[in-house]
Each structure stands twice: as C-alpha cells, then as structure tokens.
Length: 429
Image (cartoon, one colour):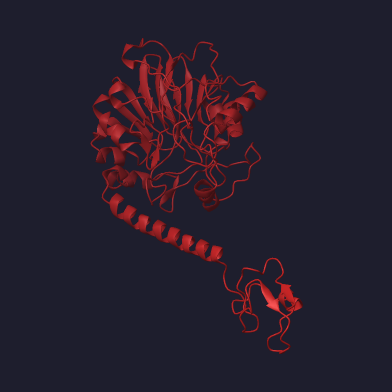
C-alpha cells in the first residue's frame, strides 16, 4: 500500500473533508480508486481552516473558551457579592445633603451636578499618551509589571512623634500620601491611612509602621479628597478626639460628620477660597485635574491641593493631580514655595496622575526650593513597577537641578536643613 502523510499543521485537527472523516489517523490511503474516497494533498492544502462545518475547534481553543467563560462568571459573581457587602458599609461614607449640598450647588465649579476642573492640561512631559480610563484599567488588571509590589520588606524607621521639639520645622513621611508636618509651631497631619489597606489594596510589607495611637494631638487634619488611599475610615475615626480642625474640600465634610466629627471642627473649602487660620497661618484651596468618589458616584465632593502660608514658610500640599497650568498659576500667586509635596506614582495612561517627569516640571512651576515626592511606596494602585516612580523622578531632578528629598518611610526630615538621603530603594526587587 502506498501511503501519503498528512501535511504538517493538519495532522491533529480531526478535519472533516467534504463530509467524510479521515480514512486513517495521520495517513491517507491511495490504493482504492473510488472517486468518493480519494483525497489528495492538494485538497488538504486548500481546505478553509476557519469554516465551522469543515473544521472542528482544537482542544486548546475549547479549553481557552471554557477558561474565559469561567473567569467572566467569577468576576460577575464576585461583583454581585461585592455590591451586596459594600451597600451597608459605613466606610463608604455619605453623599452631601441639606445645607452642605445647597452651598455646593452655589459653587461656580459645580456644573450639571458634579465638580469640574476649570483649568487646562498640556501634554505630559513624559511623552506618554493619555489613553482612556478603560485602557488604563485593562493595563492595571492584565498588564501590571512583575515588580508591581516589592518582594521583600521595605526599610523604615519609626519616629517618636510625642518627643519631637514642637518648634522644629520637620516632616515625617508615613508612606504613600500620609505625612506628619510641623511648621512654625503648628502640627498638621495630611491624608493619614494607617489601616493597612486602601480599599482592596494591601500596604507593602514594612510601609505601614504607624498607627493612630502613634499620633500626638494635632492642630490640623488635612484631607485632600475622599479616595480610599487618602481618606481612611478606621484612621480618621480613631483620630477624632486628637484633631483640632479638619481642612478639606467642599462636600468631604459629609463623610466626617457621618463618622462622628462635630460640624464646628470641619472647615470646607471651594477652589480659590482662602481661610485665615490665625497667628499668621492661612490656606488656599487650589483646583487640580483629578476626581473624587468612594464608590460608583463621582465628583460630588471637591478634591483639592492647598497652598499653606505660615509666618515664615510657604508649603504646597499637592494632593492628587494630573499636570496642568494650575501649578504655574499657584507659583505666581503664592510662591515661590519653600517645600512642595507632590504626587509621584500610581500613574497610567487615562488617569489624572502625574508621570514622574511631570512632577519635576510642576515643582519648577511652583518655584519650589525643595521637592518631596509622595503617593508611592505603599500601595500598588497602578501597573508600573513599585520603584519606577522614584527612579524616573530622581533622574529627572538630577537633570534639572531640583533638590529632591527621598527619606525612608518614617524618618524625620528637618526640611530647613541640607541633608543627603540614601537611595534606599536600590537593590530591592
């Protein structure tokens, strides 16, 4: 018998040719001359590979489809359970209502039922395109770097805040955007998150060394906006009796009142609104391109940066922000600043966060003498490697001659003094 091999690529497909199954596995016979049973190599080559009546799905394709359907089902089921659980969760807070909502509705920045950034945003200095929110989410979920989280414990210190000289100007960074600030005799605590997580993102090992019990009584609690990585229910409720006054944006006070803060303690600001705090201190809310919201509803409360003016210093508290002309405007109106605390991390195409090159450019726009990068080294909220923000920013600052403060988490930095900081992130995978 004269046998003819099936061409490569067709051997294991179980192809049905013109309604007839293969005569044998891996070979075809040429001995029987019946026209209805002779199948030539030429016909094999021209069999359309994608016709469902001609070709069955490969087992690997079927497995992939089953896996895809299983994933879709699990995601949908998890989302359903999640909605049920969070719908009764106190940590979600509360949307503005009553007199607070009436005040919000009078704001020129509240348009069609939401707050809207009034400025403009030029192209990113990084050269990366903006993309859109869907592509950003897709990249975060399915395209995150292998080193999105550090593989080992991050180095940290723990400063005894109770024993500090209250007259020293200093800052203690507590990871991400949380920091304790002493300036001209006043104590500020900005966006504290000490619960070990931001919504569903857990803190990196070694980055979450402070608790509410480690915080002394503070003059001002600053909440830049209501996102979970800036406004933490467990932390702020534990700090309630240690807090003098809360400085925040319009609408965010509704969460705090719902969680037990007395209304007289809460000082809410609209963009461009300046408040005299007395004793030579004042704050002005600065509009930034970002957004707010703790669940499905967005932009019902204000997100903001603050220009903090003290008797002897000018400090820019940046909150979360994409790059925009608001930095140069704040620099002209309130600068130059002695210190700018600006976000550096959790950026992606399609989200309003600055790329590291934008952070450097923003500090120049503000006329900042020193730049302190925050919003990194505690949570993986986007797709980049955990240390990419500081690597890129350090390189950009060196190129532009910017003084960059990058202490390890928890150490006290006396920002009026000159200090050389180690590149502590190097060597950590």
